Image (cartoon, rainbow, N blue to C red; front, side, top):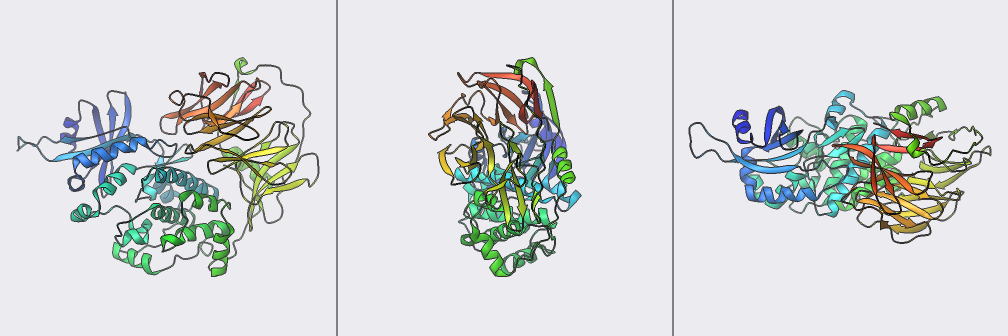
Length: 541
């Protein structure tokens, strides 16, 4: 069939070879002749295509072009082709296809087959990014229905969720036409009980269950329920409770196990209401009810925590990314002042460990305060430490704050909660709400002296008063749609952001705060960290 398919698509794509096949589709490597790039073409199996119908499929799958998110694999093209048949002049029934970027990394399934169990920090990061993608799609009314390791792609240390297109088409077609083909959307090991029982009303909590099952497998090494047949798996899914995670891997933190077990509850009403709630609970940021309910159930085994030495923490920090130093006069607006070298040691309390990889250590402009996250049996803590005082450590929050940054004078710490920006005194006190980006997903903060906070989002760079107010767009989103990890340069008038995507490649661009002008500075990278004596330190991979 590949030769006939190759002939039918020859005017737009050069079909190279088959990459893989699943229960619903076959994936081919192809070259996009118009844009001169390699792509992946997913062709639905004929029975599924006939059940969905070409018109419905093409209409619904085009709406996935709306799903523009850093952790969703985008749709590039879609269509239908009639394969020329050597014995029938009228041809064969149309084949339905859609085109995606070619991801050069691997699937989560491939990594699990290689490693079986992932490091806890890696698993939490993957789950957070998938949850972020799901939360975004759920906000647009799209339920994935088939979250599994095969549909989670890993590239450059980040997760991409694939196959929202089939989900939309099936959602539109309804269950009856699918049942006629003998096909069903969903994989038994990750399917929610209500989906396994064929209920028609499936909502976002079904995806929460599936992500919980994937998280369980990432940490334990196998799905919550397995068996020799689909019927055996579904029977266990409906009647049994998953085995405790800490009993199989002692290092799993109790709050992580509690969050996963709540996501795997049989009744949707007993799970997290949203994927975002699940992600926050994994980081110890959810309400205490999840942990308390789990502890009272008697299902939790006391996890064993190993304390990381300072040497180990440093090694993890160095291994977390490839860092480049760029020497360039264009970024050096004035000589950097001579400042004394301050040496300090972060020594977590007994039973705690310093979190690295996704949990940055942030230094105030004066160099007198550090902010970081630790984890122990009670969960996460965000801590501010005075570098000039022995034991001068203050717990800012009993959770891991997101995208935290110091104010220029070091008195405040701004951070993100959902799509809202808040601030809290850096030496402890009550937090204050500053503003919200609405539907825009926040990807990084920067505090520009003296009274301005910059907000990186999935739809442009925004600015807001440091005392609170409505964020305003700095850039035209048609110029820079994704503007993540803002870094203010020493002149106070220019900010660097990361744009692009993990699929097409990311680059660092400069934005003038005065007029929003965007300048490509010729850097390929995923994050700029800071300036040191005219040198830009940035992450390349």
